[in-house]
Length: 255
Image (tube, rainbow, N blue to C red; front, side, top):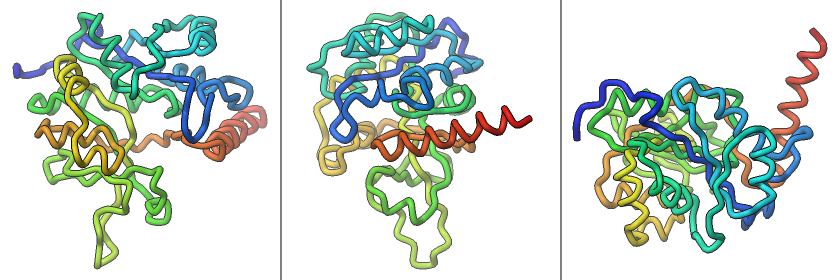
């Protein structure tokens, strides 16, 4: 692969998968978070990115598309039959000419675009890796939650393994834990290849599709993110995010 020096705005597109159905939280993309649908909250954060200027929401529901278009965003309808967000991303990406694709999850709120910019920078700093992702420090107590995916990172910053289990096992009790944030920046060619591969054994066992990349020996660089994002997997998570946003709003009004 050619060395990456600087990814230009016209070379990269951000795509947010946003399906209506969800096993743990049906309809969560439209769930009101402090008065606005979750997908609007998420897209607003992405639009603050300095490195990715073109964003597309890939959805299977006209109501989600309507919310996106109401705030001036671009929505593309995709079939409900698609099995994963990556399949949805790949379908839209196959129609684009951009060399690089950012996949930001529709249920991962961020206060601004810094995490997205970090992904792009990680690709530039590690041209040997066609995929970049994010992680942040994780509290050991939270690590017992199987909905919080853990990642183990090599000394060179590459992903070694992802798991719903508490990894690594640490007899000394001093090793840091890293929470995987389900956001990626792909070389478009690698994304399309990934979407065409069959599910792999570890992927099926953990129900984590990013393991398909590791099982095919695709190097993935991990950037450590200090921005406090908030993943919404359940109604309880939505309440946590809403409380956080309302608290910030009260602080602003109090100034």
